Length: 65
Image 1 (cartoon, rainbow, N blue to C red):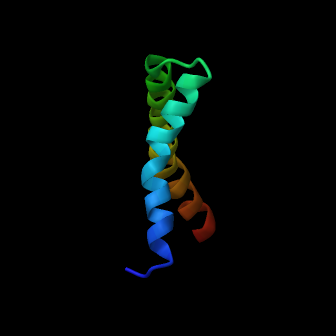
Image 2: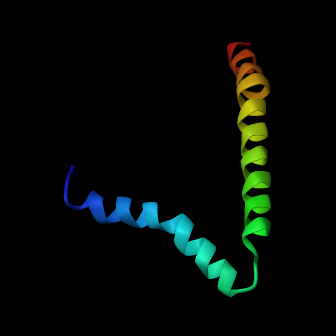
């Protein structure tokens, strides 16, 4: 792995704990943070499922015609 990418990867790895600590200092509890994360994950899963099952087949049919 190149030396330029290593600091970026370490920063990405540190982002979740740092954000949780920061939000705890701002008054957002860990349980609220978990709810926000869960809702975000569910929304992303719905988006990618609809994109795969609805949008991409529709786009493929439309470009063939």
